[in-house]
Image (cartoon, rainbow, N blue to C red; front, side, top):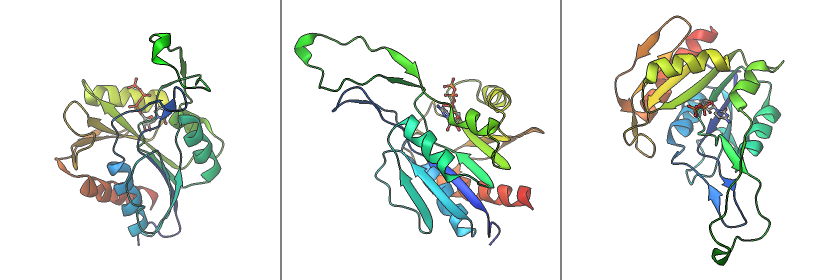
Length: 211
Ligand code: CTP
């Protein structure tokens, strides 16, 4: 039980940003990698708060699940779950939202001009928070220059580690993953493995780091 007594926050899945009462802006995240990390952390004895966007996955045994829909709700839930020893932010949070229409947009009115507004950056906010978790880990979904972009993201967002994955294939929605772990010291290439194995290996590394 390597994470006994530790509180681990995990975010997972997509967010849905409403356009009107029936339409949303979504993305292809399945939530599988984040749910596997929450499950592995609970297996390792941690107290786990899993903050999940809209996905239809069963809750990992032992994790406390908070369901959210939007980036704003996810940010509020993450801050509400503090303090934590570790936060692993796996969710594919929308970068933009729109001011939703209270009534359904009608086709007859013609295509709407959507005015995008930025969402809150949960990872960057946590990094600056007075209750910053001791180990703050982000994920970086990249389609090109994966390690370089992930290293830059680690520095600008002030995360301790970034798990970089190349999402140019079918990773989003698939059951396997190939990641690179970017720390201050180095970039580690992990071989392709199941999302459960990525989760267990990451939890092992987290436990070592907290020792
Ligand atoms: N993230 C977050 N809040 C946001 C956007 C992203 O907490 N509003 C987190 C993700 O959960 C992930 C990390 O930031 O851990 C990187 O997400 P990613 O989408 O790769 O980065 P972006 O900041 O959106 O950068 P870009 O889209 O330019 O690659």
